Length: 327
Image (cartoon, helix red, strand yellow):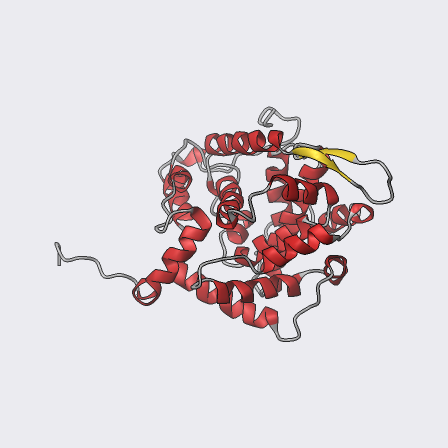
């Protein structure tokens, strides 16, 4: 009957308090309505992916909760990236702010229009220009200068994020539909390579095997030290709100269990003795139910695309040297 208030979904009735805490952690707004989330409804094109893409399928799913933790762990293994985090990151003083910043980049790139993504790329690049210093590379006596805008560091960050999102999705028992003779994992790596190109990584891998080989090529440069151990302690057990801590520990354990044993050993971590992936699947499913079937960002992006003329609903292509390249 008109005029009656709409009933809240069961997930919000039972766990509305937890949903608000989670949305606050991910977006900085308890209702998931941060200004950058609202921008997912703005723009005049479909962006670089779209509802039928493997990227929407993976990046819009609950296993990204595990993927973010896994990506941050892997990122610390590169001494240049670790130096940038240790010297410039606010993860000790503002862990939720740093997490929200990382979530923002992934979400905007996944769901935003090309104009919105361009604004986000500019924001990240401005931050990168301030992140400079030096570090001690493996097997060298002289310090090496680094900058977050270095092509090798941009490549490393793109690779470990791609690996984390894909690996977590598969490890937690989720599938990625094949299409046109291309496997789901290959689809994801190829599509998400656009994100690397946007940030200046002009030759990102486009297959799952290529991704594995690209990460392996960095192995001689990787190492674990006291700063990595300190960062890992913080990543695996940050000072989060009490309502979130138990679930986060389950997710972080699943992230450790999902790592390739080679990189887990490099990080000095042991796989949990208990079935962390199985319990992680249950935790991810529960949190996904609490948050709802679709994130506010995905909903706004879908509304934007549905309002476009049919000819403008296709994802925008991008190549390093093509006319639609970022530079």
